Length: 245
Image 1: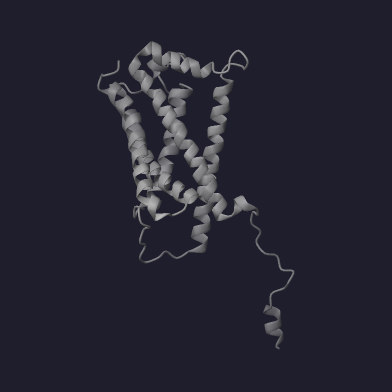
Image 2: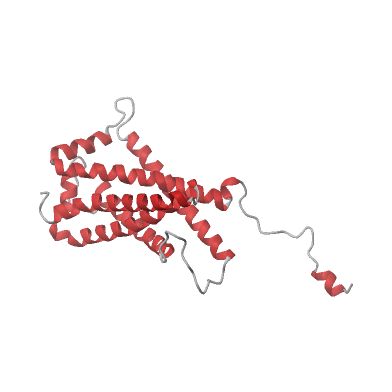
């Protein structure tokens, strides 16, 4: 054997790139983490949507609902403690969801650096689902940042009085602030596509690709997306067109 070949032989002590270990570091574990965190976030979105509909009951009822959230757990717990626990939990779920998606995407690109010439989507999946999910996620994150500054911390909202949740909603979607309403609706469209594909993918990950449930899962994902989009959109549209004043 030549010295040249011997020099190219791999050394048993050669260091290999390290990667996280454990069940949750595997692709399956990350997909489960992304699916579970996504489902929990969807449940929160539905509850939040239902809470927004209190605006149709009037100022007193809407503000009473918002006050109930801030005082939940009192007097055993400090003011807004439960609300902050929920906020921190939601942030943790969002971090897990985004981190899992980023890691899985990077692994997929590393395993297949050259794209397929013909990419046929899986049955029940849109041809542009991956791009829609990624760009939609960016729009959603930007919207969440604005939403927190607008209706949670009131930094950019004309109504600074925290107890007046009704007034803040009416002020932010008033006709003269139509760009905010347009941005809100565009973010809802992105959220709808994200929910439609995300719910379908989450069920596929947890329950498996059973063809018997495929059509039911597609219908469920579409129904959830439509309910959430319509349920959220009806509030800003009603304020903008004067149905809620």
